[in-house]
Image (cartoon, rainbow, N blue to C red; front, side, top):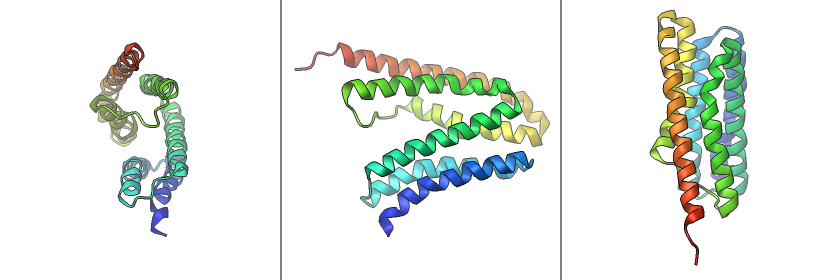
Length: 177
């Protein structure tokens, strides 16, 4: 039974995302923020718990990826509802993940280790930026922070994508023996 804990943490993100949208549509912005932050935390905990319990599986990897996409789409829906220009924050992050996808596919690598810039980009995109956006609805003076944070999030995302591209190019140019 303990072996299922990591997958249960991953599946809980579907609940948090769905309930987060319901709360958002019912103008319960603080609860929406809390649900997405918990979703973000369970995203980071599930893999560590799986490794600690020696319960890693192919199903867990697939579930994690699907849950990430689901939460991403939930945030896109909410951001588009608030202000369509907020979706711009995800553009560089999508580019970064696309580069990594092709990198993994070409070199047959299961996991690409996350650099510091990737971690910062993930935290900005999935936790910090949404929290500021949701809280700015409740506390309008916070709206002044949304645009600069959007720009910072996009710049960090571009930097992460550039770093992934450089790593990919170096791998392609390195001769294999």
